[in-house]
Amino acid sequence: MYGSAGRSIDPDRLAAQLTALPHPFKIEIVPETGSTNTDLMTRLRASKMLEQPIARIAYRQTAGRGQRGRRWLAQSGDALLFSVAFSIPRPVNTLAGLSLAASVAVLNGLRALPLTEPRRLALKWPNDLLLDGAKLGGILVETIQVTHKASIVVIGAGINMDGEHALAAQLDARARPPAALKRILADIDFTQALAHVLHALADMLEIFSAHGFAPFQRAWRADCESCPLPCSIPPVF
Image 1 (cartoon, helix red, strand yellow):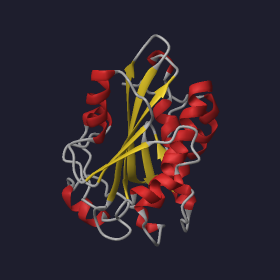
Image 2 (tube, rainbow, N blue to C red):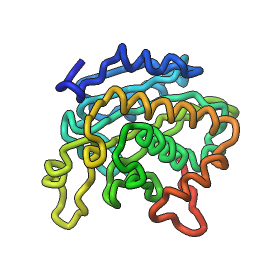
Image 3 (cartoon, rainbow, N blue to C red):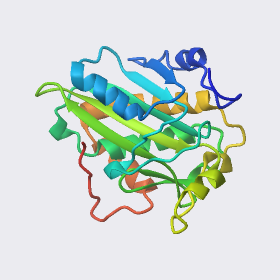
Image 4 (cartoon, one colour):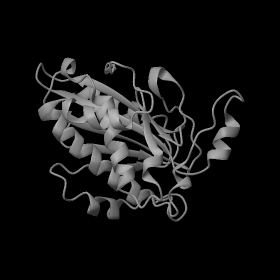
């Protein structure tokens, strides 16, 4: 384990909380990397094989990426930084809306935690997580076409758990200060938070595999703070 108590991810406890999943994740935890998404995409582009879902977690990313290649800033030990890789029985051209469904899943996972006011969480088009209207986290979805019937999806997430004042100091003065989950979560437990989010993502991916974005559209609209009308579905990458 790395980091201080509560900020460390216990791989044994995490694995125990994920045993009920139909396809349990292989857990990879590293102290530092450039980008967990890049790590998985590089590996899977080369092999185009995924024997079981993977969750790759880092305590620090030196080249974290957001939407449109924007840099993702996070203090070491203050953010939950991870990517999951999952094989999905759909071609890439049928994955529209996956980033929105992933946002819904991550939001649901966070709301399963003992938050004081879960309704202060919201979504922003296309893939931001908000707390009190400020950015709490973001989702990045990338895909690999394996066959004409199957793809591998890599879903990366960065979620600010603490340290919002230190993070705000790194940003341009014109930028809106970010938020951290500590505002509405008294006891930060990275293992518990990650377990809830991974459960929600695994459930979402099973449903999306069978039905696409349709089952998530109502939930996304209900929680979206700035949804274009009509709702615009972003492409996958």
